[in-house]
Amino acid sequence: MHRMRFVRSTHLAKHVQTHLEVREKFECEECKKSYTSLQSLKDHQKTHSVDDGVRFDCETCGKSFRWRASLREHKKMHRGEENPRKKTIQCE
Image (tube, rainbow, N blue to C red; front, top):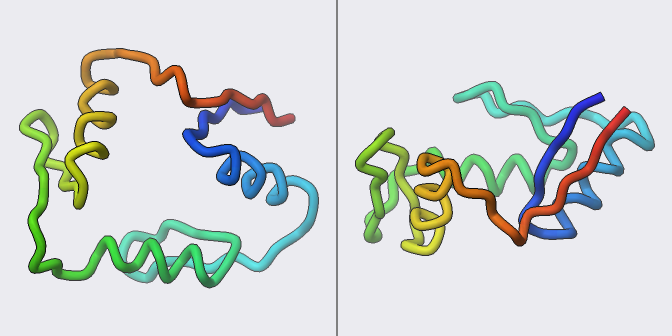
């Protein structure tokens, strides 16, 4: 059993699907993360590409974000704050 939290209900639904059926895994060659769809892998791979746009960096851990709102949400984790929008599911 494991507990996972999701900001969006669509992410929760995708996660539940991974437990309901066997799916092909798509692995990122750069960081070895795996995804259940090719589109998810392609979206993830964009995070590895060089971006000429503005980035927002976390002073605590150095993680970089494209959006200020994402950095704000990330900083809550360092402060130990819970995100009330996240949903919790127990998977067995």
